[in-house]
Length: 68
Image 1: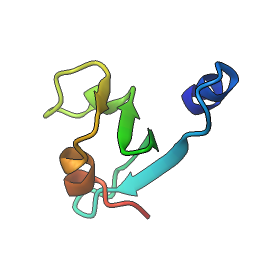
Image 2: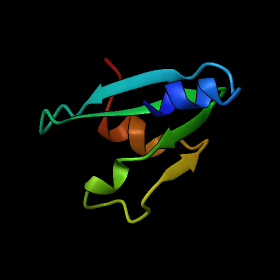
Image 3: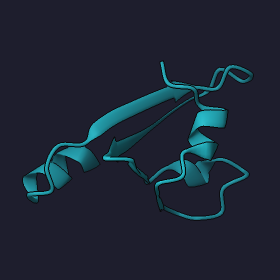
Image 4: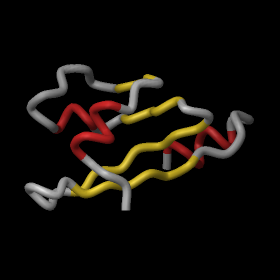
């Protein structure tokens, strides 16, 4: 829904990204565009303290949720 909102706001298309943690089999989704990651639900995980992540650093997502 966030990606759709951003498109309608004139901010172009965003990619829906989805990954699965191979250890716990939990899944997670976020959006990306041009190397920018916007993740509005990462704070559900214990090792994340920010309510919203906006970053170009994919380290956490790549380590915990390899894309399917």
